[in-house]
Length: 309
Image (tube, rainbow, N blue to C red; front, side):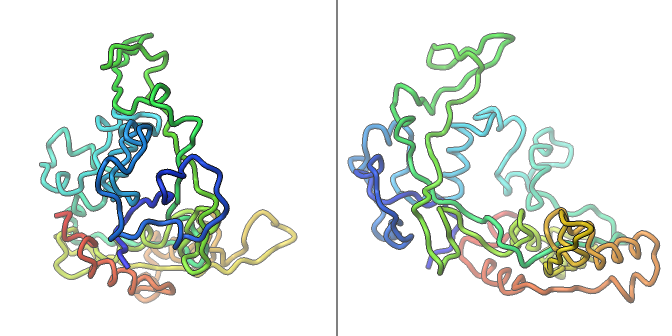
């Protein structure tokens, strides 16, 4: 199957705003070879919302939609962030636009510091939200209520909009979508419209470990000076304590709780003090399926870093 990053929408445009019974993901998703490609398969309301012709959105289409319609900033987010990793890679370090890519490890190489060491310490083994299935919220889908092309310039108390109207707060319209709780699949680890994967309960494994593996590769463009990179995973092993019931115990791999993980704390102390760090810490601990995930991602035609640099 195609594992290109995407947002999948409820199938059946004519029934988007009708009550439906729970369906499986297989029945609720448009196969790639059957995706709609012409506008007349969509309602007027959907066209007003600029829903792409396919019910399966690419990552670029998803980001473009979020920039247009919300997230607190709408189109103004483009003055703060850029999601174009390839452009970020090309930007000179002195360029004012380079700062827009500070959040993106794909857009910039590690610093030239050959004596530096980098340690990736994180937990794994917890179900973690990875993807979502959405539907239109019919009470917000009317064209008169949603104008996704509206852009506003805030000036003191008033926001003047490109369509000649004024917005009271200058914020973009609320996106008219909600999680499709009917989407479910045990095979795909999906419950109530939320797909889960391995991770630390907050951050998926892919985000935790992928770039650390790429940084560690020989002759990596993202690590030009050969900084030594070590990945130290900790499998979540919760333990309930009557004296500390709010925490997961000394072997927790949960996103925040891992700060109390005895293995992680030992690593941190050894790194900070230099005590037997080369013998005890300067080696990988991989307890997840990270290696296979990285391999599959890099082999995908649209995956990996080959399109980003």
